[in-house]
Every structure is written in C-alpha cells, then in structure tokens.
Image 1 (cartoon, helix red, strand yellow):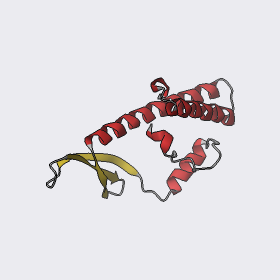
Image 2: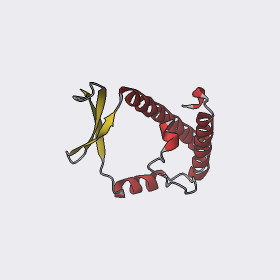
Image 3: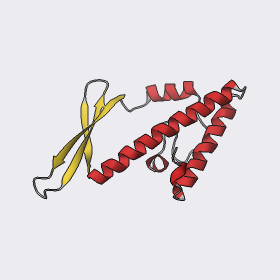
Length: 135
C-alpha cells in the first residue's frame, strides 16, 4: 500500500536497493535534514463552507514545534491508518527475520539481502492486489 509508493527513509529513490547497516541508518537518520518527529496528532473537523467532514493532520517535533501537515478526508485517514499498521507489522517482521538470520551465522549483508528480497516480494504481491502479502 503506501509504503510501496514512497521510499523508506533509508532508501534513495532510483538507487540500488542495498540495505543499510544499523549504524549507517542511525547516522543517516541523525544527520538528516528532517527534524525528529515525536508524534502525529489528528483532529476532526467540518467544513464551514461545504459541511463535509475532514481530519487535520499535525506533526509534533522533538523541539516542541508543531506543523499542520494538511487535511484528509475520513476515507483517506482510514487508508493511511491501515498503511501505518501494515508498515509497522512489516518492519517488525523484517527485523525478526534479520535477527534470526544473524543468530544463525549470516552476515549483516546476507541478512540485509534476504530482507530486501522479502520486501521486494511483498511489494510485488501488493501491486498484484494480494491482500495476504501486506505483512
């Protein structure tokens, strides 16, 4: 779903899909131009002009600042919520697979390649409409 359309924070669009090591990911994340996100906030609303419902999405940053990211329809909000849950489950699965492979003696590169292959399979299945491939 959504994670297939947008590059992960540790991937560059169009680049080879070599997984980053944990240290490289941490270093890149910390040096990123994006401030640390602490949480997302949502607030319901009703348009004064059309009477249509909407959801305001706000991003809360570690420095205490807050930015309104935009408005979504209730349906878009539900779709994004589902995509977040799916991405969270996929991340846990990927980490478990990599940890298990490392415990079996695989190098970080081999474990990373296996996780990348699983991600590619998951994305292929999602693009073909297989709902069981999401996590």
